[in-house]
Amino acid sequence: MRRWIVLLLSIFLMSCSSAQKKEITLATTTSLQDSGLLEYLIPEFEKDTGIKVKVIARGTGEALEIAKRGDADILFVHSKEKEEEFIKEGYGLKRDEIMYNDFVIVGPKGDPAKVKENASNNPLKAFELIYKSNSVFVSRGDESGTHQREKKLWREININPKWKSYIVSGLGMGQVLNIADEKGGYTLSDRATYITMKKNLSLQIVCEGHPLLKNQYSIVLLNPNKISHKKSLQRNLKYGFYQIRLKSL
Image (cartoon, rainbow, N blue to C red; front, side, top):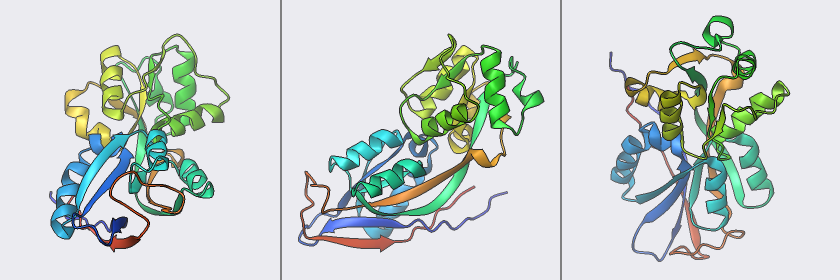
């Protein structure tokens, strides 16, 4: 059944008051791109506001570095600790939590670590089972929000994930899911990207529904006095605020 969900997405824009062309650069995560959200959201935003959006989709860590260099106008990311550190260092003015989904642990149908049977809603035990069974685990390894959460889970159980079958990919979420599928391994994924791709994957969700798997997304407003923008934005910046309606299934 189709249903309508109204999502109020707060986006702070920085635009030069003298500029004729309205355009912003959004530094965001690969999960938002791979999930298909931006593909729907951006045309609606551009239609509603007349402002063009250029997207740079990377892991959250790299997106933050892009913003520090002045190569973005706004951030749409999902790593609270990194975002708060970014603001504390003076690069950001504020962060607004605007939406969330959740992480899931996915794995092969055979589930060699028996995660679904023994730890279907316990990510800490799930990671321990994967480690002890020497199963293939594919990590983002890119300092993204997903990678930060993965590292937090390993720290919680005092395991250094460096066994032979642990693969550090340095890639985005969609690519990591494909690698895990090809190698019959496990990975941590945001649910939205997995749902978008699952028809082409043999992976199944083996662990979900725990508070440690909540995945919060935020908009971060940059500090123009700290970041020297390299493109059309100058010192006479003006902030705008917009609300977007998102149609969802």
